Length: 473
Ligand code: 5GP
Ligand code: MG
Image 1 (spheres, rainbow, N blue to C red):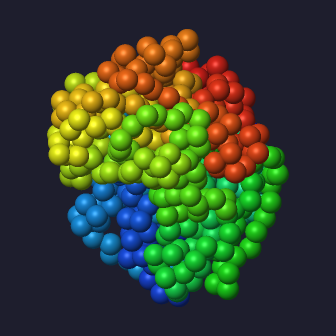
Image 2: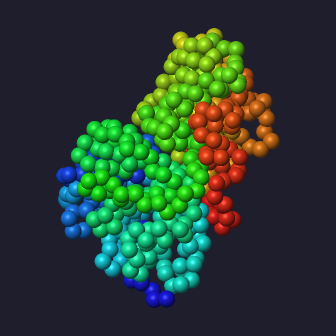
Image 3: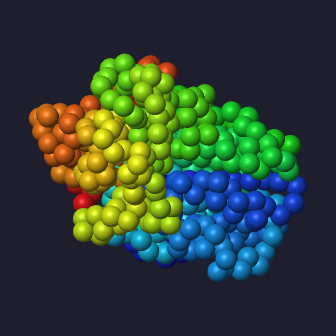
């Protein structure tokens, strides 16, 4: 086979595939400002880098940089305008914080310019890369997004129709992907056949859009039309949109979007995230009661679960921990010392609230246990009489290969075989209890087999090859 000419910007870096946020807009006037606003609305989905791609009537142009959306676009001058474009924000993982990983990524092949933003993770990227390399293609990165882009470019260069080229590409890749793609002036969104990560289409005040979460449409003066179906390509057009299906497996929506990742005011696949979290809390109160005086949430992500626990148990909800909103996210700091130092100044208890009280402390999830260890100590030092830890997700014990930054088993505090008493001791708490898997499933409201529970049970909706599993450090 001939080696097709392909220009790909240099995106040298390491494995880059994480929780991220994506957006696409096609409106009746310049979209660059609203693309940036959309990324700000989705900022919780990624704080490492931000980028947009605009079609200026002739070419695609990418603008991207490191940092929060506001920081990136206060430094970059956008010297083009266009009525359509895509945007991406990337979540950081320790050690991979470099501009080369920022998206959208861009490629030129024949008459096509292609830009792509990806949320998720491809489990057979390694295999496809090896296969293409053996045919003479070379890759700039180990990024799975480059693999998708490259496959698509190859299929387009063969002269395939654009939709056929996409279908052919997606028939080869396995994993979690919610994508926004521009091919010259055409704008697409794609959701994988298991619909693992969220993606929705909606109306904005001035046109149509695609976004990871529906809050984007609401805050841009419009509303959601619907979530993408599993295995669907949607093309935005001047009058609306066109839909193409390429797969129809049974959905396996990521439970962690509901537990932690998405905004509470988002509604994903018909379930409002706040309502799900509140329900988790109510079920947690039913399954794991505690004899206590007050319920305190771990801000911000444990609030809705704690409210549910309070409603379910009748124990008053009190904001007893104040969070410094200017402290960086501790979860992603590169070393354990750094994480603990930051945690030191992140949260402070209100002594007057907790003194002599039996406290139920509610958080959405426990991963390494750093946060919990710290907070229990803070509450005890502030005079709490008892601390009962209640957790809004079942124990996280297995890595995620489909887009959440939890890669190695060793990091999890809740390891196989560790008892709740041992965990309580480790956290310095009087008791520890987690919502059950069935309780979580009930709260989300889908059939169990329509959810991805991989990080809880170690079984994934898509076979994970060894090759891929070895890729994580
Ligand atoms: P831990 O301190 O146990 O490692 O992490 C648990 C805390 O971090 C919880 O408060 C939870 O809300 C938050 N958390 C859980 N998963 C993630 C994640 O993937 N990223 C970030 N930034 N925080 C997370
Ligand atoms: Mg949290």
